Image 1 (cartoon, rainbow, N blue to C red):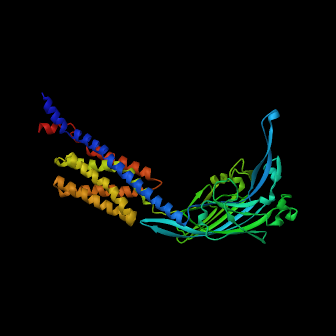
Image 2: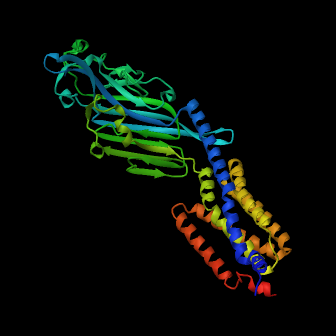
Length: 461
């Protein structure tokens, strides 16, 4: 009968114990893998800081909401009850959107280099043309006491006014030219922008110059103006008109259309792109007029649309996606070494397995560091050749077999090739990874069918 000490010795020398020990080592390897994830996140955060720094100097992502017609008015508000009722006059502002708006623009782009990072920036020349209907104050409120037409402004909200590079003037009905002023022109309103007071255009108001005293109303008018502004990464617009048309062209090769609406028409080629949006007011749940006391100007932001000047080589995302498969490929490499150990009968120490795991983990560090310098593809080749060659040579030395080293090199070549293929299949990456994992598991299962997991035969020998 087998003694206890012999049974314990057989247990510790059995392939099953070695298998579970390897599984434990794989779990331990999650610690350096978490450090790799943190390193990727830190470098990505650093890149974002650089982009923000460039944006602060050149111009940030630009979002344009407008033009909007803002008219101040007063209403009577009653508070309290019975003999404690108090009447007060409260000032509010009505917002009217255009009937038609057409924006024709061209964005000249370039890539700025800051340290090892690239930032896409542009200079946009935008022409605005459209019309406003005569504002009907009854659509905004029913208990209006007075309307201050003389303080009506045409406002354009711009996310980063520091990007404006020249003065702008509003042309009304082809004749009146009024210069825009800083700020959005609405007291106590947050946000950046520019505005122009309409009082000097006396022909807009009933009774001519009576607009200065607040008498009369305002008629509809046509308008046009141009903006020249710098920006980075994104250029988006709000569909403020009853019929909004935006025509935008640029010399950027890789546009990413974004927002609530995609272009109705687009032309893409290696040198430039052109896109056209045609958006009716029925496509957004916003009325043509409202009071700022009820809804802010920013209510249109959820309907913004436009283009992102996409930098196609975002290697941080690729490295992050590659690291998601780290445990699966690490387990496959360990199983390959384990099968070679079983086949040769030459024992591989757990510390040596740990060295193999650290080498495979260091693949991601090499990939990240070289990708920042030479691009993802070249970095992938360097990292794969370096770690694959190191592990193959190490296994050959441990097993004292050149052939075993070649087998390990072939396994790693398949693994790294498979990983690169998965990274290229954005839409089918999960399916490809699942199939690869299933196939690897099947190979290991059938390759170990004849393994004596208990080690009884080895003890008898």
